[in-house]
Structures are given as C-alpha cells and as structure tokens.
Amino acid sequence: MKLGKIPLNELLGTLREVGIAPSLDANTVEGDLVASTNPAVGVPLEALGFFAFHYSASNVAVAHAQPLYAFLSLTMPPTSTDEEASLVIKAFADECRRYGVKLVGGHTARYEGIEYPLAVSTVIGRRVRDRKPPSTGDSIYALGVVGAEAAWLLGSEVPLREMTPLDYALLLQRVPEVKFMHDVSEGGVLGALLEVSHFYGLQIEVQADGIKVYPGLPPELDPLTAPTYGVLLAFTDEPAKLEAVCNDGNIACARIGYVKQEGVGVVYKSSVYVEPLPSPLVELYNPYTPGEFELAQVELAARSLLKTPGFEQLVPEVGSNIAFARTRPEKPEDVAAIEGRIVRTPRGLRVCGRVAYGASRHLARVLIEASKLDPRLRSAINLRPDPLFLEALRSMGIVPVVVSGVHSECPVSYAIASGARGVAFYYSNVPNLEPSLVILAETPTALVEIIREALNRRKTLSSPEPPNTR
Image 1: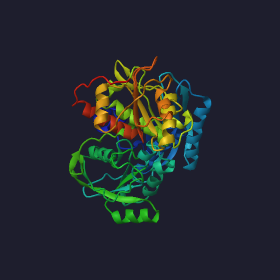
Image 2 (image 1 turned 90 degrees about the vertical axis):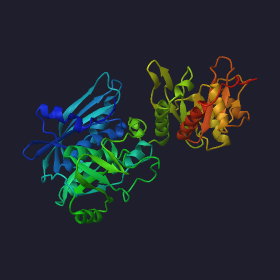
Image 3 (image 1 turned 135 degrees about the vertical axis):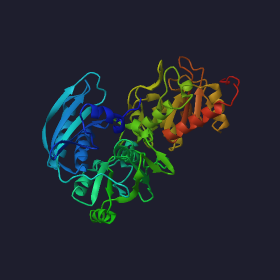
Image 4 (image 1 turned 30 degrees about the vertical axis):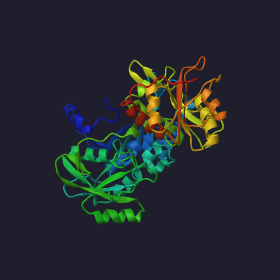
C-alpha cells in the first residue's frame, strides 16, 4: 500500500458519482468562491502551523483566488501538551494575519491512535480571474528553487519561506498571460506535471536543463522527483511576459517544458511516465529530523536498510542500531541514534522509536573513542557477526578486528581506547554479551553502501571456517 495522496485520476469516478465536480488544487463553492482542504503531518511541531496554512492557502491562490477565510482542525497524540497545541495554533494564526486571512474557527483535541500531530486546514477565497485550462503548445515554467524541501528533509537548514509557493501564486494570478498554475507537492515536479496531464488529457514534454536546483542536493537524487514544495508551475502561451514579471521580481524562473499534444503522460529523459517515481525521501517526513542533519541521515539510512535484501540476517537478537556523531563528539548527547533500534518482528524488520541524540550509549562510546583517532569516523552500526558476512568484508579490504579477553560492557570502545585500529570490530566470547560486529564509516550512507556490497559478495561465498577468537 502506497502512503501519501491518492492520485486524483484514481478517484474521479467515485467523486463524480457522489456529485462532486473536482478540480486541481481548489474547488468552486459557489459563484466566485473557491475552497481547499489539506492535511499537514510529519513535520516538526514548530513548522506544522506554517505548512498547515500554506498548503491550503497556496491551493486557493494557484486557482486564481485571494485567500480570505481559514479553519484549522488540530488533532494531537495523547501525550501532547496544551503548550504544543498552542504553538501550532499561534503559528497558523500568524500566517493568517500576514496574508490578511480571517481565522474563523476549528477543532483541537487529543485522540488515541494519533501518532504524529495532524493539522487539517480549510481555506476559502474569492476568485480574482478565471482559470484557463492548459493547451497544446503552452510553455511550462518552474518558479522557485527545486529541491529545497528535499534538502530540508535531509537535514539542511532551509528557511520555511523558501518552501511555499504562495507569494508566487498571489503575484501571477494577476498576470493575465499566465493561463494556469499548479503547485508542486507529493511526487515532486514530475508528480505535479502528471496531475495536470491526467486531469486535462494532455501529454507534457520536460526539458529541464535550465532549472535551478537547491545547492547541496545529493547528485544521486533526480531533482524532478525529489520533494520540492515551494515550487510553482506556470503555464503560458506568452512566455516573454512571464519571464519579464519574474525578472522584475527577482524570482528564480526556468522553462522546463511544454504541452506537447493530447494524450496522457510526461515525456522525461526519453521515457514516458504515467505515474510518479518514488523518492526515498518521503520516509523522512516526521516531526523530529527535518532540518537536523545527523538525525535525518540516521533516519534515511535506517529506512534504506529495511529495504536491503538479506539485512534481516545481520540483525542480532538485541536489535541493530545505527549512529551518527557530531564532529568530535565528547558525550552520548553528541551522537544521534535510534531510541529503540531496528528489530526483527513476525512481520519483518521494524524501526522502533524515533531518532534522537543520546539514544545509544554503547555506539556513542565507540564513536567518541574512534573520533579521537580519526575525526572522519562519525558513524557506526552494530550487527550480528555472521561468518560469511565477515568473509565478504575481508574480500572488500575491510579486515574485522577480533576483540577478545575484554571484560567490559562495551568491548569495542574499550578495545579502541586500548590501541586497537580498524573500521570493523567483532567479538563472540565476551561473558554475558551477545556476539556483535561494529562497523565504522564516515556517514550512515557509507555504512549502507558497505553493508549492501558485503551482502552481495556474501551470496558468492562458501561457508568459511568459524572465526578464531582466541
């Protein structure tokens, strides 16, 4: 089952059956009034009110309407406090005041079954001018910097106002040469173009050479599939006018394609796509890690390992943890890890608990000692010392160091402090401790790459002799 928004084209039949005439972004209430409802979830509490407002207000604005009235329904986990609810409501109200929108009312409660705070907003606005459907030959422009939200999810500090298209939409709704607008949400730029394609029965061709991409976005991420809320798509048959408006407003603006013909799909890199491409970053939507580099990197690595074939064979009975330290850590609170580890369950592997600083005392001690010898070694993971996996590591040039004769609750940190050198350590005969393998690397991503490569090599190896730990 896919998480996220159910594509509109999959619901059109049902919506029409119950009497709804759906539109992209916002629907007509009556006359020139339009409305949009959206949830905000999986973002830090201090950003929840901001996004709750902008998700719905932007949808109204791209439908060529001025946002006027807002409602907010806020449901919180049972453990949440009144102060946390107030933080969200005040942030939402601040955005309403900033844009001249009246906050009419809403609903606030705590309920069992709510894991993350959920803010559902409704914004009503009055149409400024009619929206014209896109047509063959229209040029498509992207306003804003693609990938800012992805960079934020990965832990970069990105100002919230760089992750909303509202100001762009309010500007362009008064530019008659702009026929149609659509904001980018789930599925990235490619997903937004597909929504337009399916709704209007048009095939779109993408030419994204000139698009502005957020600095530092990992090169392995395709900018057009990465989460990128804050970018606005504008369709026009008079591109010179749109470019002039953007230049006057100092707005990043790039032509990314055109409406090719009637049909369905987006032509991108010589392929025709009819549904969005998945992005691994969607699993980083949570209230804890966006904007926090170490936390986000641990979360992403953990989710990647859950999808790695064979990784379940390496998870010890006590579970695996993965840690990432700040530069030159001095105490456990300088090291991010999973509070409850990666554990095996009857339904497969599961990440238990959230990522937090100070969540793994043992791996923190390992990284504190390792960083004294090599400050680049900031990440660690504990695994089951499977003999075939150890042999696979050796074939990669990673020779695991045997830790023996140590009576400590953290044998690896003790061994490193005592002079042992390496990037992999294992023990199997320490009293009262389950056998364990600890691998060190510069980043959690590097650890994932090492594990995947070793698992691939493991398939081709015959079972070696049991390791000599004496």
